[in-house]
Length: 376
Image 1: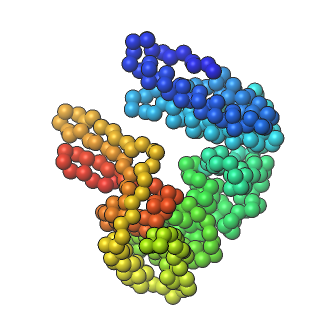
Image 2: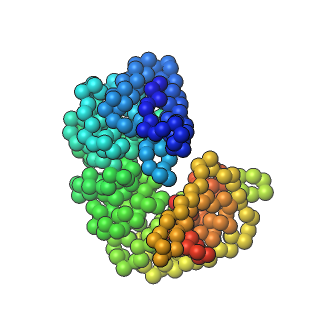
Image 3: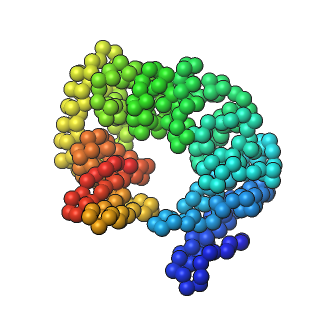
């Protein structure tokens, strides 16, 4: 492995840090190659991609910059290159003829993926399909990417969400940083006549992560569109309320271990609901959650993902700002976060306890005052 030349003197404190980061990157490359030990054609394709990226960009070297994790970007890229190599049988052009369209990671990767697999431009959010772990869902979404790149329309794909022409138009206009499911939800909301603000809010919640029961959830989205006077921050709490009551069915911790919970309101419908009645139901549910908080406390193990702290230095006349991202590790912490941020994160307690989800709190401290900024 080429350890690459570092623009530092041996006595530079940055040298050791960059050297360790490069070792981390090289270890990730070795691990990715080893995954194709029994698939020599894919291993050769990955080696070719790595060589082309190395010779034309700096993207497999530690990213410079104070306070940055220099190996994160290259490791992110290696995973995407591995997934591209797994589809080498469908490449239209050889990597050797690729010329990067940009020096930044995401646009450079986009140009590489489209060079290999597409005859026509593919929406930027489709790049997210190359982040998925190997499996049926990754295969399905990557097939969508390839079909779009060969000229298929969005509506011609075998999507889990039926789309009108107007919805498909808005899907193609979804922001580049969205996942495919988020883009589909965004297009659905905008195609129903929802605002840009509503579309962006919906994709941040449960409906942006999962597409199930599409016919029912469209009635919920219709409700939001018909009631633009509803505070936008109430949209996802309503979604959480409906999910828990109509579909619930989560495992809950009892004295006898984990048991499957029957949804309390499986026949729930949006038909005939008014905004006033929905807000009344939501308020009552929040009171019920507050009562449950007094019950058995759930706690879970800390994630291997490290917490984050950053001291933002301000001019002399201003106070420095301390930013932090910390994991919430028990149901009481989730409850306090939900009360402070006015959302229903407490309902994720069982998912956190089972290790399926991690919840984090972004906070800002100025002097002795700390403010919660966002829940992640």
